[in-house]
Amino acid sequence: MLIPRHDLRRPRAAVRVAAVLLALTGCAQAPDAPPMPTVASVDLQRYLGTWYEIASVPNRFQAMCVSDTQARYQRDGDDVQVLNSCRQADGSTTTAQGVAKVVAGSGNAKLRVSFFRPFYGDYWVLALADDYRWVLVGEPSRRYGWLLARTPTLSVADREAALARAQALGYARSAFVDQPHTP
Image 1 (cartoon, one colour):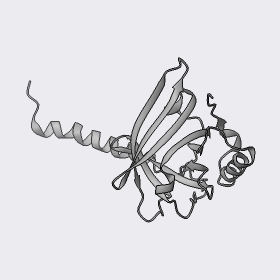
Image 2 (spheres, rainbow, N blue to C red; image 1 turned 180 degrees about the horizontal axis):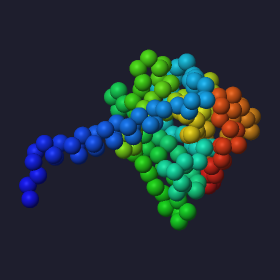
Image 3 (tube, rainbow, N blue to C red; image 1 turned 90 degrees about the vertical axis):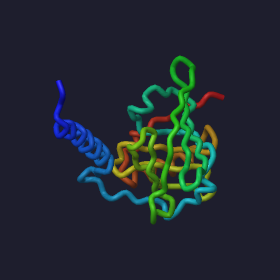
Image 4 (tube, helix red, strand yellow; image 1 turned 180 degrees about the vertical axis):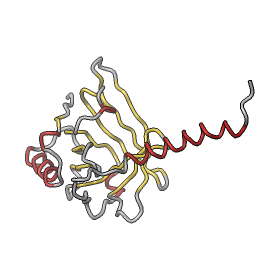
């Protein structure tokens, strides 16, 4: 049976609308959440390289990670290439490759990251050590958050400073779960 051409357009339009709505759900901010400030600026050249996950707010896309979670950032023209990796319970390593785009006018403190184009999520630098030894990353809804460091361990003082900042920004301090690293 042949389907008239005009009937074929409806499913495509529905798929487009669904994709747009799905993308916009990532832009929504909880109604009672205050605006999320970021650092004034980030020197992307200094930010590039390897970061180790010290603690994070648990999320579904990292549920299989049990240790050794890290992110590597490399410049690629105007974009930043992202390679995330972690160790799974069976000892194997899994990776996810993505791309980040700087949000214009953000001083490089706001990026949009995608591991599955065309869908992007917010990656905002909320706090950053002066020497770039640790960073607190999150997004406006506060459902996701990461404390990253240049080394697999972070001093108690630095960890407390970062988590105090997270709490001041509206995150529950207890929401951050430590991420182990093997020697």
